[in-house]
Every structure is written in structure tokens, then in C-alpha cells.
Image 1 (spheres, one colour):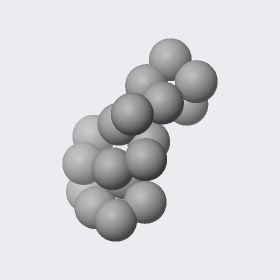
Image 2: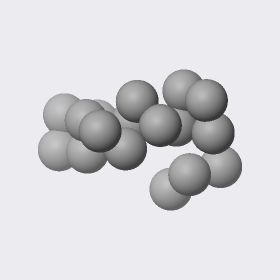
Image 3: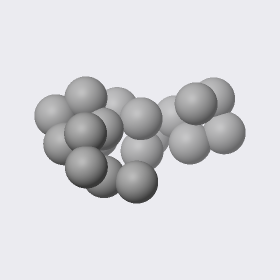
Image 4: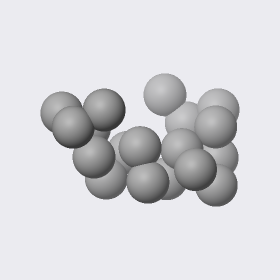
Length: 18
């Protein structure tokens, strides 16, 4: 999500993040 861009990048490696 654009609102959580950095978090989305982390989600690529950790889908469980958020």
C-alpha cells in the first residue's frame, strides 16, 4: 500500500508483517 510503502517492502520478505 502506498500509505505503508516501507512496510509493504518488508512484507515482501515477511508477509506476516502487518
